[in-house]
Length: 311
Image 1 (tube, rainbow, N blue to C red):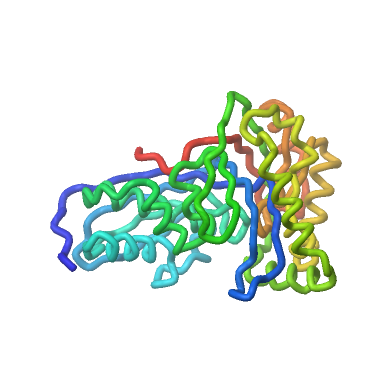
Image 2 (image 1 turned 135 degrees about the horizontal axis):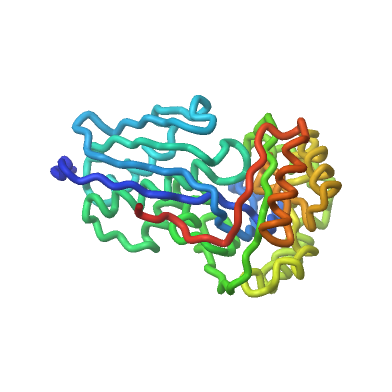
């Protein structure tokens, strides 16, 4: 592997959070993975990543929202993404990463995966590697299920572990969201373990999953007015996540009481996402939900938005 020789260039990138408009999960397979169908939407809540040359790298500093909870060693997805691309193109990743966090961690918003995607895009540009988006997405899939989505963002459909994402057509419709983030987070591993415990009681789990997957694929996610899609905003992980963290159910009820037209949990939790009619309604909803003690933070965002963007 050749050492990096680019000593003067640097790059700054912005990457959005995500919500899942639908999550459908099948039973645990023999390879210990689940069949899973996900509808992703990128939303206007952003982390910022600055990448520069560092002969002693790869190193990382993290500031902003809950930065103290994020590891800065080899477990960090930014450093792992840099190494993965470096291995792929034959570069030593002698880089320093300054990560400014606005996306809460362990909240079902994809922050770590988003930062990994920004790393792949940024290093690819800095190194002049000319790796295409599809190959970056393949590298990203080896780092985490959600990473490929953030390369392009907008709205996309995921139909299984390491299977290519399907980018969906989008129209002019804007989804206005209010996000309620509970004080405690959830680990994806613990949520899926609880899901498996619940699903073990169902002998027809595989059949139900395949039926739900087909229905999900047929929904015109990106081209229909959001208010007409309320009945398909579903998350199979909401039940097990709520068992582990009852604050999620309390938060979802608070959103409905405050007038949200839909309330759902994103990803494996713990963020509660509340759909508003428009931006004005979202602002009033945010003000109302900020009074709730169950949330440590209440934010506004909209979608869909593009994925990783160079500043």
